[in-house]
Length: 382
Image 1 (tube, rainbow, N blue to C red):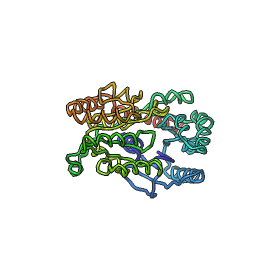
Image 2 (image 1 turned 90 degrees about the vertical axis):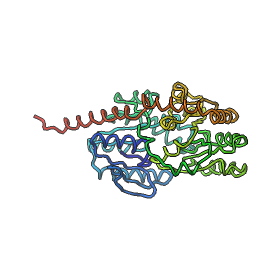
Image 3 (image 1 turned 45 degrees about the vertical axis):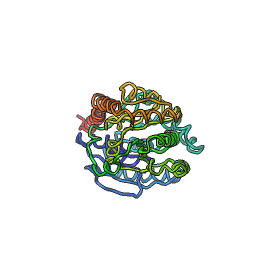
Image 4 (image 1 turned 120 degrees about the vertical axis):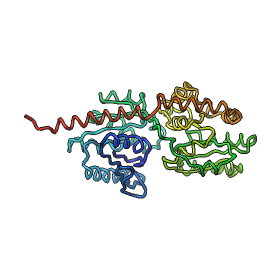
């Protein structure tokens, strides 16, 4: 597996796909962006981290390093995770006759509008000229949603949706010391990238309102900021309003420790703004909250309504309405029996339908078919 933009330990790449393939008997190497550079074996998977800076020169530099590392591995199947790494797949397909898989995590046309001018030009070239041509060359395309699948069916017949559902053992760890650290606190948690469009500042302001009524409220924010400017805005608001006891910025938390924080929390927040990008992307965090048995406060957007609303696993709100968000937090904190029932419904829905075990079957079937094709292609001809 190769990636120009994702960490080798990305939850979908490493903890789901790579580990599933390892269990199925494949030898797996993951090469991705990491600082510092490294090469380790983790849980039986060979992991290679390559440093990447910013700008076009950095992109071509990491592409060259990824290609060298990928060729050194000499795998039978190569699997990339964004359009920027597609050139490596195509080179290996055309020059080495390798089987190649393209994994599409997002509906990229909607990402273009959120990028700066230079990035928009690059992405438009990649998405509307380069990508459609080369998608026809790959052996399989994997998409994270059915909406994304519809786009790529125009370019290739072998397109499969593998939802980014959590593994059933996601919440299996336990950290009693962590629970003691937040004793007597009413915890609201957000897990994910810290972007303005994900309702972070509105969530902080809602917690500020709740703190006037429930001083024990505490918001745990797990994730790294998208920009220094937005980080400054959030932290200044906390400092100016004396919210240091009510809002905690935890930064990056390793995937294997995230569930510990969710399990000790009372409410999980998914307050994505109503922008085009979020009408087609399914937030993984809602499933992680559900498997840990906590209720969700989520935006009234189709990907959240179709899961949280349908399963009765939380309450839907307008993410821009801070009064509505704060009142919903207070309601759930004041009604533990409602919280528990929503948590049970969410957990049951994960066990029944929204789990990685079902997705693993599809992934392994795709790889097994490619392996069989490789064996056939390499068999002696009579």
